[in-house]
Structures are given as C-alpha cells and as structure tokens.
Image (cartoon, rainbow, N blue to C red; front, side, top):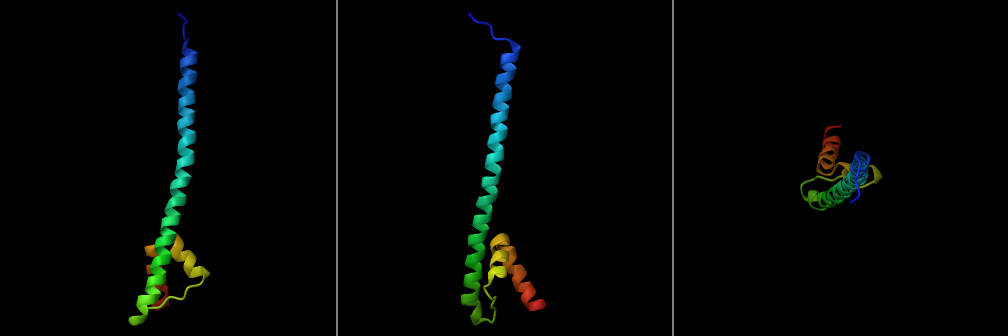
Amino acid sequence: MPQIDIFTILAVFLAIGAIYIIGMLLVVPIKIVIKFIINGIIGAALLFFLNIFGGFIGINIAINPITALIAGFLGIPGILLLLFLQYFL
C-alpha cells in the first residue's frame, strides 16, 4: 500500500482552497452585474411609468442619458433623487 506524506495532503488542501477562492472571485462580479441589470430594469420601468401616469398629477421627469443612468444605477432611490432634484432645485 502506497504511503501518502504530509506534503501531498497539504498540497491537496491548498489546491482545494485555491479553487474555492478563484470560484468566489468569479461569482462576486456576476452578482454585482446581475444587481446592476435588475436595478436598471426597475429604474427604467419606474421612469417610464412615472412619465406616463405622473402626467395626470403633474409629475414629469425628462428622459435623457443622465436621468436614465441615475435611474438605472440607483433604481428606486434614483427616481426619488430625480424627483427631489426636479422639485426642490
């Protein structure tokens, strides 16, 4: 029966740890990208519906690249920020 020395066992554990760390480094950016995509969809939808239905009560935010980026990156807080900026500045 072949003997396994301590260095072989240590190398296997280090390899497993390295694979885990590399896997986590790949998963975290994917989570961030998915979060930005979801925020972008929610922000764009809210900006669109706010312009459609907000016209009845006098709320209107112009859709341009700056407002689209703010709504896309921040989502709901971005829409609230745009409303605050429009009516208080």
